Image 1 (spheres, each protein chain N blue to C red):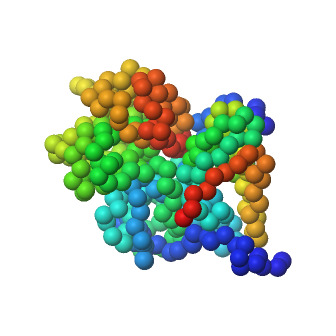
Image 2: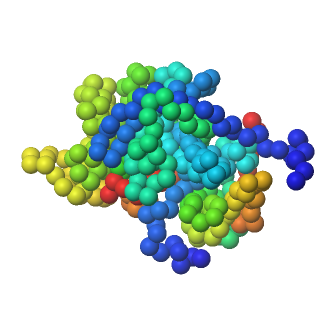
Image 3: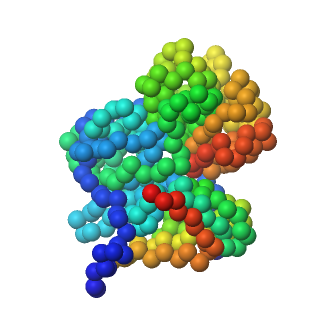
Length: 257
Length: 94
């Protein structure tokens, strides 16, 4: 087949090799992978990368993973990956990959679901809603917010199924205890430990209204999770008076509710 | 084909999830690009289109009427884009 004329060829975002520098267990089914990426030009909080695995016979599979780390970290990124039962890429990362392995990535990707600690955005209340591993891009936002020294009022409403499945639990506690305007509300939808003081049901409009209340209808909001959660949360925010253009959504894998 | 929509909603993603393929194909970040659904006229950015990725290729549907807006199929030698469901797409100067 003839090559495309150079002028018509779209500029590709290139695949490159990253090296797994560290692997950390977050929950029984979720691990974080630190990747060192040569010449990484940086990213914005909320962006993701694609990972491509190629078998010796040429079969290849690509998956998209949100970057968990803040842009302030140079030369490396963290991905937090939930092991999906039939997931070709996530099961490789969980069961096969070891520190030192090299994998193909491309990115950073996406300019829609992003938050920057610019003067304008950092002055606005920030409302984050996560279901399960949908918390990953929101964690990048919270880490970026903390590193940038932002003190805007911020809330994370985070839905997990069981207590042991709460991703980043200790770090979220630490961030929420820093006294910089962030509070984190958890809900557990399947089981609660004795003495649980958080919410105990799926995210609904009343819960959204309660957590959002101190921020008011000017909040900039980001919702990431399974479709059902995203729809409930986005519709609730619209009914509570948030303008459409301040509600950003990203639909994630099928867990967390 | 619309019957597939029922019962599989948990697997529906959105334009964010396929942004890498779209960026590699179009040469720009497509998530922030607004476009109009040719079926119902709804204007939405590509990030908010519903993405169906389990078939061969990628199907992006209008969030309002579920009509197909974009289809992208990668073969070993080229990428095919069916944009007949998009009345227009608006690109900002870079």
